[in-house]
Length: 168
Image (tube, rainbow, N blue to C red; front, side, top):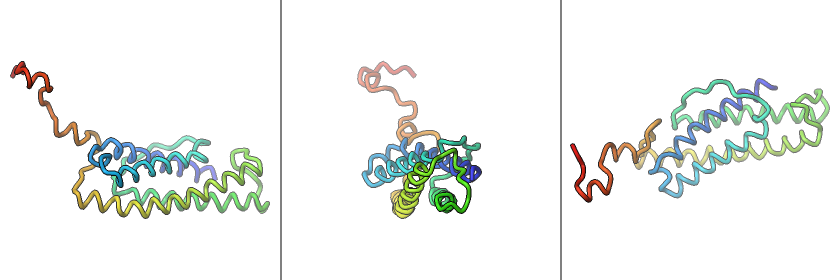
């Protein structure tokens, strides 16, 4: 069970890295629908902490923005597995062994995980539209440099241009 939570924590960290890159893209953040998706993704990633705070994530990999659906699908499978195991613990068919949680805590964790499954499904649906928007509008999602930095390059500042004190 702990192995499942470690895999979920690693997947959570990978998704958080993608979300961070997306939130640094000025073109995406300028559009309400993509901005909402990015913030919803952050809320979902933060929600996973209900179980992932108990463990340390393994080393993360670099995923492309197109891999959001893959990560969400993996997380959905892992959360379903946790839900099944916790339900068995609550029913008494297996011994309670989930990070020293009592029965009441297990019920709350179970409810939170079921809510995360639902949120995961909504984000998966929204991801289709988000990916379509990126492709249709040909928005580049760079890994290290934001769009604004790429455009500006080494241009002189406003005051230097205004007063002509730009030395070349």
